[in-house]
Each structure stands twice: as C-alpha cells, then as structure tokens.
Amino acid sequence: MDRNEILEKIKEAGVVGAGGAGFPAHIKLDSVADVVIANGAECEPLLRTDRLLMEHYPEKIMLGMKAAMDATGAKRGVIALKAQFEKAVKSLESVLYPNMELYLMDSFYPAGDEQEIVYEVTGKVVPTGGIPIDVGAVTQNVATLINIADALDGVSVHEKHVTVTGEVSDPAVYRVPVGTPLINLIEAAQGPENLSDYKIILGGPMMGAIVDGNSSEVVEKTLGAIIILRADHKLIANKSGSLENEIRLAMSVCCQCNYCTQLC
Image 1 (tube, helix red, strand yellow):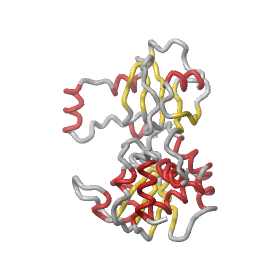
Image 2: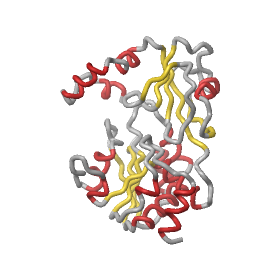
Image 3: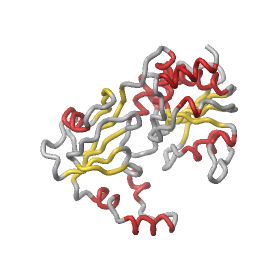
Image 4: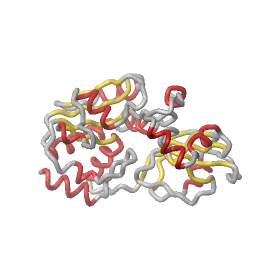
C-alpha cells in the first residue's frame, strides 16, 4: 500500500488525534519526516487509558507506527513511554519492528507534552510557535496509531477507551461506542446516583475541562478520561477560578501551586 492509499484510508476512517487535540491524522502524516514518535507517556495523573492500550494492543500500535512511517518516509520510529509502565514495556518489546525502538522516560509532568517528548527523543528544540515537523518529527498518540491500524482494514473510528475514576466504586478503563452519554459511563463505574452535587473533569486533573455532573456531554473521539468529584472538591475549586485570575496566573508563567508535583 503506497502513502497516498494509506492517507486516504486514514481520512475515510475519520482518524483524529486521540490524545485530546483532535487534529486530523491524515493531514499530520501528509509530510516528510525523519522520525515518527508515538506518545505513550500519559503524564496526566489518574489516567490509565494509554497504558492499558500499550499492554493489550502492542501489535496494532506497531502496525499503526509502520503505516505512519510509510506515509511520512521516516526511517526511525520511537515509542516513548514511562519506564514505570513495566507491563506495557514488556508487551511492546515483544513485537518491535525493525527501525523501531522504545524510549523510556522518567515520571515527571509534563512528560507527554509534544515539545517535551520531541526534545527527549531527538535532542532538538521545537521553535517557539512551531510544530514538531519543523525539526523533522511527527508525533501521534498510541491510541491514534491503533485507530490508524484499524483504518487500513477499513474500520472507522467508532469506539473509545475511557478512564473513569474519582468518586466511583468501580474505577476502570471502559471501551464504549463514540457518542455514549457520560452518565452511562458513570453508572457502569457505580458512581453517585444523584449527580447534582458533583462535577466531571473531561480529561486529566491538570488540563481537563469541567462540566456539571448532570451534563448531557457524550464520549467523543478525543476523550481519554472522566473524573467525577464533588463540586466542593479542592481541585474543582482551583480549576473554577475567574478568567481574570487565570490570566494573571498565566502571565506569571507558573503560579507555584505545586499541584503537578502532588498529583504525580
């Protein structure tokens, strides 16, 4: 299968960046790169989605990586993940293709940041306002690579693995159809019956957005986790500050809250 066929199949399957950005994968791969980097760092605390995918679907990740390398002409493929993900490391090592390698990272925040992971793997700094391809790199989340592997078989993106955690009795990673109401996931994880006094974080505790517990939101292609917490939880309060305060904190670069260190 040539690069044009690969890109067309990825486009037809509706593959987008599954790590949260949602950028169309066929556009990102329509480039010339030296290296393709699979982001499996999953640096947001409490999330387990990517770790589980690497443990249970290593072959699909390799197939997706090979397709990404074929599309971009990259001669090197690197799967970057934390060394502490021991089961995932073992699974991936058992199926590594030629010209592919693992890059084991320390556990720090934000290990999964795109610019950070490019620097860790290549030693090159993405220029201010630039993107990884500016230094010859293309990054894809490991879940995106699985979707790319499925796309080559004509399977569109119709399911999502989602971490459900927080104030639930059965926290786990659930595989559900795209479009599933969040309330269904909360019920499956044995969460609170009355959600009026709760909030939901869409994504990780550091970067995720907050919605009401009774929200009508559904699972989208980019959703990796939901965290259910009481509305008066300190994390919810800290993430619900005024826009004016957020701007002030952003201007100071770092507010010294220490939350990233505590949660990691």
